[in-house]
Amino acid sequence: MSNLMKIGELAKQTGISIRTLHYYDEIGLLSPSHRTSVGHRLYSDQDII
Image (cartoon, rainbow, N blue to C red; front, side):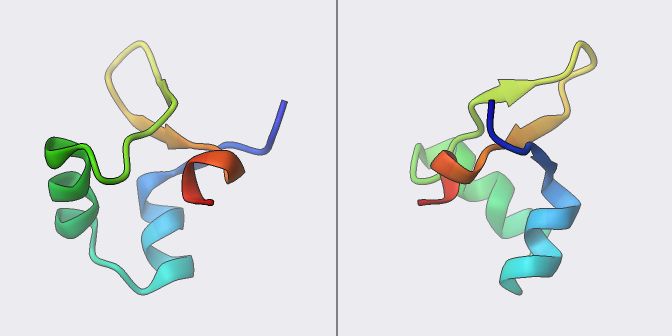
């Protein structure tokens, strides 16, 4: 299984705001492959590629 990162970590690494990442998820451009039981988005390396 690849390394999973939270949306905040992804935002820091990419320089894209969390709000923009939420928007990308809404429109289906970049969707997380996993979510925690409370709905937190988790992104894998494959999601980012």
